[in-house]
Structure formats: C-alpha cells, structure tokens
Image (cartoon, rainbow over all chains, first blue to last red; front, side, top):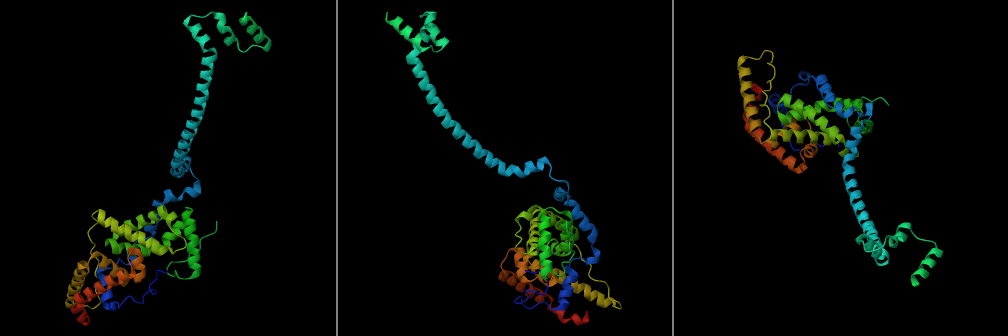
Length: 149
Length: 200
C-alpha cells in the first residue's frame, strides 16, 4: 500500500470543505516544515542509533556474540544437561550392577579370606595369592593338590 | 558497497522506488548506517507530522520520532519485507505515541500560531478570525482522542482511511465511522463560522 495522498480515497466520505481544512490546519496542524530543523533532527536520530549501527563497520565484539548466542544457548545447554544426566544415570545403573555383581563374586570366592585377614583370623599367606594376583596354571594345580593332602 | 539511490519518498509509488526501498530495508537490517541515514531522510518529515498529531507538541513529537526510528532498528527483524514499510513504521510511531501519552504526562498542548496576519486585514477581521479559531480549537479538543487523531491524519496529512486503519489497528470501516462522526461534529460546531467564512 502506498502512503500517498491520492490513493484509497474512494469510500472515505465527503471531505471537509477546504476553508475548514485550512482553519483546522491553522489550529491543529503540525508546525510548518520550515520551522523544524530537519538536519539536526536527522543527525540526532542517526547519532542515537550509532550503538545499533556500528556493528557492520567494526565487527562484532565477543560479548555481542555471547549476547547473540545466549538465548539459544540456554535451552540447548539445558537439554544437553538433561540428556547427560539421563545418560549418566543409565551408565551408572549398568556400572553399579556390574560392580555389585563383582563384589558378590569376590565375597563368595575370596571375601572370606580378606575378612579373616582383616579380623586377624587368618594367616598372612592366605591373602598372598589375592595380592600377588593370579598364578600360572601349573602353580594353581600344585596349590590344588596341596590342599587335598 | 553500492551507493544508495537517493530517491525521495514523496513519490513512493513507483516500482523502482519500491525496489530501492526493499534494498534499503535489507541494508538497514544489516546495520548499514548509510542506509539508515537514508531511511531517516525519507521518512522523518511524515513521521514527524504523524507524531505531532499524536502528541500535539513539537518537542514531544521530535522525541517520538527519534524513539520510533530506534524501535525500527530494534524490531527490524520482525518486519516482513514482502509488505510495504510505511504502514509498519507509522504504526510504530502511533503506538509508541499513544503509549507515551498513557504512561506519562506529556507536555501541555502547544499553542499553534494562528496564521500570520493578512495584509490589509482590519482589527475587526483579525478579531473575528481569532474568535473563529478559538471556537475551532475548542471543537477539535472536544473530540475524543481517536476521532481527533483520525480526522487530523485524514484531513490534514492526506492519509487514506485504510492507511489510518493499519496505523491504529482498526478495521477500515471503524475508521470511516470515526471519521464520519468527527466530521459531523466539526461541521456542526463550525457551521456558524463556515457560514460567515466570507466575512473572515
């Protein structure tokens, strides 16, 4: 739509007579164009707008990038955090179950030796095999034979 | 960067101007200060006229025009380039002006100079004219704000009712109705003056 004076007049009704319009302009019209310092007004407007306009000339500063990214970054960060928490929760559950089963195996297999050693009820050499780590196959066979004797 | 084509907004209907305007707005969107300066040059006078009719005070109108142009920069990303710029911009001017009037006391309505004394006018004619203008001012000020604004924008600034409707976010029929009422009231109040216009 054009904002000029001639278009769209149809259907606007009967206008006021010209002399009344002139009288209306005299008592309610804006100041004459010559009474306004347009150049100063323009300079003031453009000066006020400088903070918005000098981006293209000087390039963006880091805080302007930060400010531009802060709005999308907040929900994205929140979503990533939630997903990370969910992910960590599921990994923790798996790891926890693995850990507890390992502990259970240890309890059944060697836990008694450890407990006895800690409580002072067992000989130090009972724990040695656990500290030293797994032995070779031959050593394990020897140990088994010795225990049956 | 291509130089700006400095077409004046007084002839905004030509296709080339519309294209130039689209390019101009695109560059303003890119924060091009030269383009913004050109945009201000094109629209500052009409913006001031609209602002004056809202604020009824010259300095308030200047403040409003400044505020409206800054708002353009702040909200330019919301502007639909497929639509003409002027209605969108003048709507900003009117809305911010009306909000300013609601939110604070604006400066008292400025007394507008009532024309210069005609050469050869006798003191009697000048006195009659002053009386007629005073009656007219009273009649205009007695109009509700919306009626007053509409009649000023249509009768004094030459806006079509459809354009004013866009500015005020009203339907064109509603604006026509307000305009009809305002004209009716003014004609009624000013009929004695109009009949005696020859004497003025």
